[in-house]
Structures are given as structure tokens and as C-alpha cells.
Image (cartoon, rainbow, N blue to C red; front, side, top):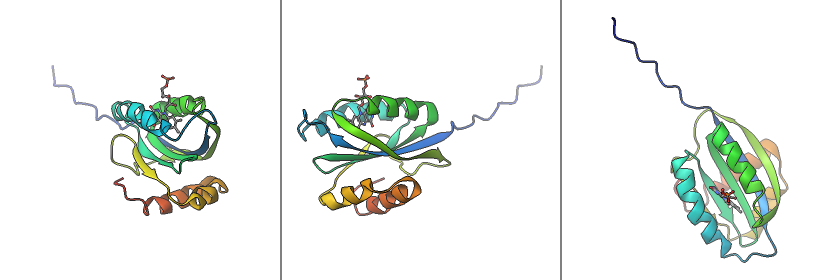
Length: 141
Ligand SMILES: Cc1cc2nc3c(=O)[nH]c(=O)nc-3n(C[C@H](O)[C@H](O)[C@H](O)COP(=O)(O)O)c2cc1C
């Protein structure tokens, strides 16, 4: 019997979401600590990477990962009562990751105007603005 030729494993198709939302009235800004403590180990073991930005009132999160995992997570996040007015500004297929840390980077936006301006944009314009903003944060992607 000839040896079987191993089939190369194909990487799973990647997908990304960019959304923004508002801290729920019932919450205080300290909710961010609990969110990250739970999110990081989950994301790390499910191949989800990205960045969560918070200005004390508004969230903006960019998530990427295998399509099924990231879609399921986006659904759970959208239903999370710790925030409201979840608006997906951009979603789409991705050929390679934009973030290489296997969990969730976190940045605090000090200028509320940045988040306000971002919330006015949709689609590719929102994505480009977020990516430009990302380079101003003191984080490793
Ligand atoms: C702004 C925000 C961002 C979140 N980001 C993540 C995340 O990146 N990964 C994650 O596993 N959960 C994240 N969560 C928590 C999820 O909404 C949800 O609580 C978690 O997936 C557990 O879901 P379950 O309680 O239905 O099991 C986030 C929640 C909020 C409010």
C-alpha cells in the first residue's frame, strides 16, 4: 500500500465585524473589566482577535476570526444587556488577520469626539477611520 499523501489543511475562511454601541444605563464603566476577563480566554481558544475601544460610555469593537465562530460571537455580543444600540458599521470576508494577538486588545479612547465621529460613518469609511485611529492607540495589534 502506498503511503497516503497528506492533504494540506486549508485555513478556515476569516470574517470581520466592526460595531459600536452604548454602555447600558444599568451599568457603570467598571463593566469593562468583567467583559475583558471573560472575553480574552474565550477569544484565545476560538481564534478570535481584535480590539475593543471604550471611552467610558461608548464601545467600538473590531472582531476577526473564523467565520462561524465570529458570527456566533457577534450574535451573543449583540444580545448582551450590558450595552445597547449595537450598530454594525462594517462586516465582510477577510483574507488575512489584521490583529495577531490571540485575544482582545483594549484601548481607552480619551477623546469622546473620536468615537462620535466614528459613529457617523458606515461601511468601508468606518473601517478605514477605525484602522487609522488604531495606530494612535498605544497597543500592540
Ligand atoms: C462591548 C462588549 C464586548 C464584548 N466582547 C466579547 C468578546 O470579544 N469575546 C467574548 O467572548 N465575549 C465578549 N463579550 C461578552 C459577550 O457578550 C457574552 O457575554 C459572552 O460571549 C458570554 O455569552 P453567554 O453568557 O451567552 O455564554 C462582550 C460584551 C460586550 C458588552
